[in-house]
Image 1 (cartoon, rainbow, N blue to C red):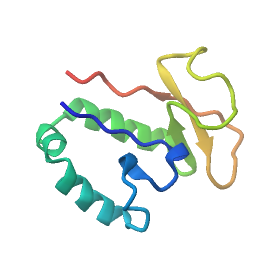
Image 2 (cartoon, rainbow, N blue to C red; image 1 turned 135 degrees about the vertical axis):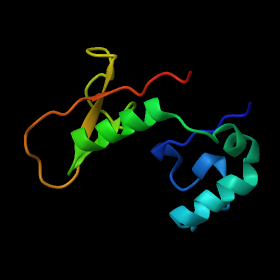
Image 3 (cartoon, one colour; image 1 turned 90 degrees about the vertical axis):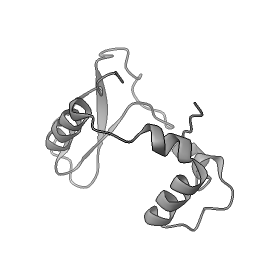
Length: 108
């Protein structure tokens, strides 16, 4: 199966598309469905384990933390100190608390 990825180092070339830089998030979603139907089809169905992890992640990061697995910037060494969790960055006011998010469950 084909896979796609995006990193902020790609700027506005989402999924290596060179003609989507002015799309809204909804527009990008429509393009994703149109251009990558095999991925969309494979993603259909329920995954309650992942949903549970996602809800926990939202609770841990609310209101001003954003989790990341890898970074395009210079920062602390990634995942060497605790490969079972992701670091977060703070957006807005920093409350001084480091938040760690467990990694998502494996795709079963």
